[in-house]
Length: 293
Ligand code: OGA
Ligand code: MN
Image (cartoon, rainbow, N blue to C red; front, top):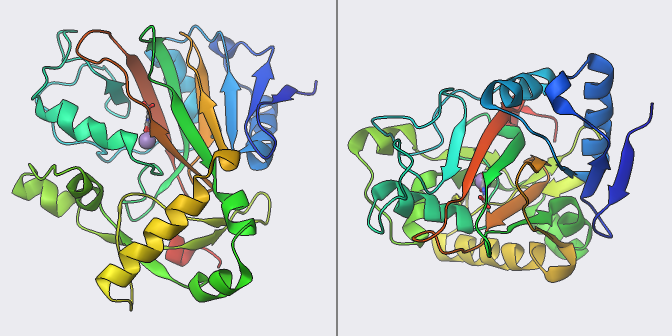
């Protein structure tokens, strides 16, 4: 059986129809999903009534889960699985996070363009975000195609940055919003890691720009020049024609390839409405500097 795939955008992103992932994923289906991901980078699968265990089982059928933290440390997890990232505005009792809650202020960083876990030495492969509750307005997630971003760069710029290496850290992206309430332990956990700026996407052989708001330095470049270059590339990569905006419905599952997309959350009234999203993240094979150029 072929996957029933409907493109959502001229250059990437597609919806897959007719799947029921509560029934588990056999290797044949997993392979078809990988092939579709290699082509489209973002897949939307609607009407998936997954609980946490089923979402875990689906994610594990596609690869190895990330286990190290991607968030500031919290005393009590709301979610039962440690690997599940809580992309919500709720505390462990299910109440809305207050305006000054540290977790809320940290999570606002998800509204900056980024790729998940580029601040870890081995970054993320896919992220799989499932919507359990959504606000009546706002709260879209936007995706940008970083292979198209590379393809459309001027050749002189491509040559200039081809072998560049950037430092990524959560400390850098949060500093952009003035968030600096990191404990000493977090400062160590989130110390900068080097990543290639230009990657080769194994499944398609295409190059992609590996950008994120987590970048705070480019090796061998004065800092203002580096940050200006990154800002320019970000602007180029996120032009409207390379962006797909996803309007969520409950039980949407969206999978994206962090090697060749960026994404960001959009605003909603989080002091009034619940938005409960849960993310599982697969690990890439190795640090980007150890992957083929
Ligand atoms: C994420 C993320 C944005 C959003 O789940 O990694 O950045 O719209 N989400 O919630
Ligand atoms: Mn993210």
